Length: 530
Image (cartoon, rainbow, N blue to C red; front, side, top):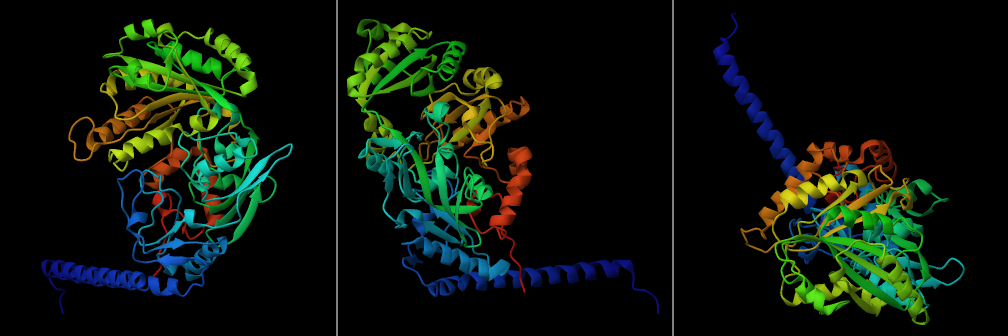
């Protein structure tokens, strides 16, 4: 018998293969749907002090970024660390046949869905009811807090003892676990380092459901991995935060520069000398009108006449924001130190503005803006933020291109730019920073106007962000993203560079099934079908 003609064989084979693929994909789809449909029943059987919510899950599918929405299967409201442990252990024991993942959500301030878990479980960390905050006052004071505690609450409690944490973020209505999983930086970081450099002890629930107490000397690999680890190795359920004596008052100062080089030199000088300000930040002002008049609501001009003559229209300016902490009985000394430090700087003399506020008012300053924005319905809008660490040697190239060519319109939100000292960062943690001894944080904290198609619209801002990142890459600036976001593992591998191997090893050790923090899109849980 002869072979059938090739023209007959090919169409039949193609039809056979196509039919097989349709059958296979249908089986997979049915398997997945059956798997997810049975999730609530398996979770309902878990003994808890708190509870699962299977109905009102939509709030856990949103975050501050307001750009991504992934609905979870359930939200866990834990009353104890045991609730978190039991839930994760249950998922761990289900093995790779379950598609369930877990995301810890603090105050929901992630930008691109990092605290979300599509068809998984979101843990509402603010529900966690551990022991009350415990302040230890001694030669080395500290406070023990829940991972779901807000920094503003820690400030209020520690101030009762005349103490406060050393390092802050600009916005205090964030959870401890959230900021420690990234870094936590503000204008104090040049002196004290980020918040991850000011924690001595952690309690962590790993991706296997194990509760581990860790510190530099006890389970040190997990301790350093979790700090800045983007939630990949464990959920922070408790932390010991270092404290220092708290000041009474703050001299809050703003000055302007028209020349970026002078602005950068002055910032680098201030973070390098021993006697200096307690807080140093800068920001960029592009084509803003009536700038100094706006400052008058919170600051007093040193020279009102000269300040009234200053014209900011149509210019790119650089503002240096400074703070000096002091006790009420040290006012004169503080004034003298401020005068001496300001005399060393090359700012525009007519733009010196000062204010005197309590320490609490200064640290919680951004919340005042939040209240105003919420009242106008402008808080819950898309926030396409871009945060970058830039080596000192490349900051001038970056400024020339970005502030000279890419950004030409008034930004709908602040643009921060200030240097920090690498010596205050621990290279054993998971955070990725540039190699140089001094590097800058540049943060484009933009808000998009919903439905706008103009320069304040989301698409325009995202296009600008893309241009900035493309420039950084083509110019080989050695930039690293802070609060990073990538869509492929190849991009994550490039982000971590030499640290990637250690990062992968830690993932394999502490969360081998990739259960935790799926919203970071670094690792994907592999689902096996049997």
